[in-house]
Amino acid sequence: MATSNKGNKFISRVKSTPKSKTEGLFEAYLSQEAILFEYEPYGAEEKNPDYRFKKKGKIALAEIKEIEETPFQREANARLAVSSTAAFSLDPKELYDLLRRRIDNACKQLKAHQSEVDACIVILGQKDTGINDVTPDSIFYAMYGDIYLSIPIDPERGGAVGEATSELKVNGALRKNRMPAREMYSPHPYLSAVGVVEEFNGRSMYEQKFYNQLLKKHKPPTAKDCLRYLNEEWEKHQDKIPEMYRDPKKVYYRVRLIANPLSQKPLPRGLFNGRWDQVRYPRVVNQ
Image (tube, rainbow, N blue to C red; front, top):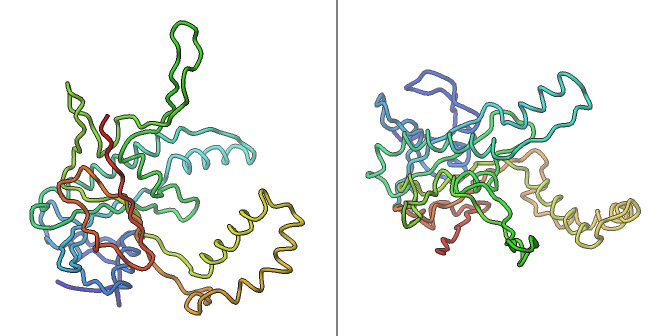
């Protein structure tokens, strides 16, 4: 059944439970782009992806997975409950592993119906509205492997014999090696992309652009530079904000995706091409 976000009470017609924040954002995005969609299109079937929609002749399935609390939030809340000045460190692998589990679980819903569509998408979100740890960067490492620093060492003298390079471990949700030839493959070959859906204010976006200009002009800016910028240049920048972005309460929606280059269902180029959408297409380099 085709529907839209208008008048939506955010209720699942199959599970009779409220929809998640991320599902609400995704529906708002689809409505903004004038894309008709079906929610839980396979009814009471055990494997029932959250959304099916069609754009430019391509049919796609999307499964939404949301994180209640990230490892950083959990650790921060625990430490702050003891002391307001507690310091701590956190291995980003904890977040990557959590995202990998969400991707794997989402794929269980998509796999059963992947042969019927042109693309399968996973959208990850974060229930808490505090510090946002679920970003395209964290999703990239969850998909393709933990980043580490590789330094060639002379085994006899013990010193470095070349420049350090950053590489990825083969432990991503979408990147494995098939032994013995170490052939790269994706354990979810039908998955086209993974990403996030975001709500943003256009005025804030332009203000960030102006702030970035200040950072480029003064590296780093001093307090005097900031005051001069505010007094002499800020008003000029206000006039440069497009009319559609001047309302500080008006919000827009965008999807930011990381494509799966190992997928047998490559992400169609026109599927997410909204005004503010971003899609990264990683390259596969065979060594």
